[in-house]
Length: 457
Ligand code: SF4
Image (tube, rainbow, N blue to C red; front, side):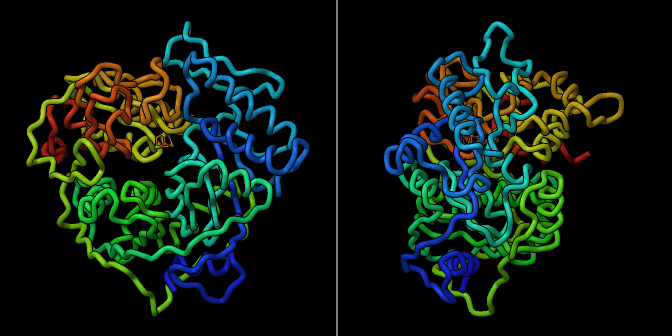
C-alpha cells in the first residue's frame, strides 16, 4: 500500500484498502475557521439538534484567520459566532482574536492596518498554526473546511479539505466516507541550489501535470532529496497539492518530522502519541515523476492558473506590485529568504508583507542581522509590513483588506499559492506565483526577475 492507503486503512479499521474503495474513516482532528465555521455549525445544529454536542471536544480546532482585520461587520460577526459556539461546547482549542471570552470582536480601522489588533490567543493562518500549536501528528486523519488543509501532509498525515456539509457530519459523528485516492509519486533527488526554494519544486511539479493533473489523487513526495528539505519546505510543497486538484499530499516520516512534532505537542500540551506510516516495498502508483532538485531553477506560475509554468529567467514582464504572505509563503523561513535578497536594497513597486502567524511576527521582530531586526531591514527596503498576521489579501477579502488588489489590470507577483482570476481582488488583475526569493528580486526591479543574481555574493 502507499502511505495514503496505509493511513486510510488504519483509520477504517481494515488491514488493506486500495484505490477506489469507499471506506468510513475515523477523524483525528476537525479544523474550521471564520469563513466556513458558521456554515458548518449551522449544518451541525440542523442535523444533530440545537442542543447537540460535538463528537469530541478535544478534536475540534477552530482558528479564525481569513476575514479578520476588516471593518466588514458580517466578517466580524463570524468570529463572534465561533466564540459563542466554542463557549457553548466547551472547546479547549478555539484560537480567539480577542482575549475576553465574553467580548465581541470589532476591527477598528482608525488604528490603521499595520499595528496589531489581536489578543494573546490569536493564532493566525490555520494551516501554519495547526502544526505550530501541536495539532498535526503523523499517521492521523485531519479534515479541515479549507482546501489547503492538505498542507499537513508534510507531517505524514492524511489531511484534506472538506465542505461545510461533510464538516457538520464529522462534527457530530467523528466519521466520514472517503474514496481511497490513486497515488501519484514525485520522487525528489539531489539538493536545491542557492536561490531555488521549495516553492519552485511544487510549481515545477504542477507545471508538469497541469492544474487539474492530480484531481482526486494523492501526491506522494519521497526520495533521497526530501532529506534535505526542512519542515517548512515540506509544508510549502504539500500546501499546493490542491492547486493540481490533489485530494492530499503526503511525505514520509523521518527524524525531522519527529523532532518538529514532538517539540510542538510538548510545548502546547496536546496529544503526544502517534503512529507514523512507513512505505511498503510494494506500492502501486498511477504516475511517477523523478525531480532532480539540482537542476530546478526559479519558477513562476503565470496568470491565470497555477499550472502555467515558466522560468523566471525567461520572463520579462513588468509588474505593479509584490506580495509575500499566506500559509504557503508567509512562514519565518520565507521572510528570511525574502529579506536576504532585499537586504540593503529598495523595492521599486508597492510591496506588501503579511506574516502568517503572530509567532512569525515575533520571530521577525526579534531576530537580528547585525544591528537591525529582519523586520527593520524589510521596512527600510520599503516593504509595507503588517503585524496583523492572517490570510489578508491571499484570497482578496473585503475591500479594506491589507494588500488587496482593488484596481483592474494590476499585475502582482506573489508568494501565495493560488492565481485564478480575481483571487487577490479585482477580477481583471493578474497574479504570478513565485518563491519568496523571486518575489523579492522582482520587487527590486519591478519586473519578474531571477533572484540568483542578487544572492551571488
Ligand atoms: S493564507 Fe490563503 S491559502 Fe492559506 S488559508 Fe488563508 S486564504 Fe487560504
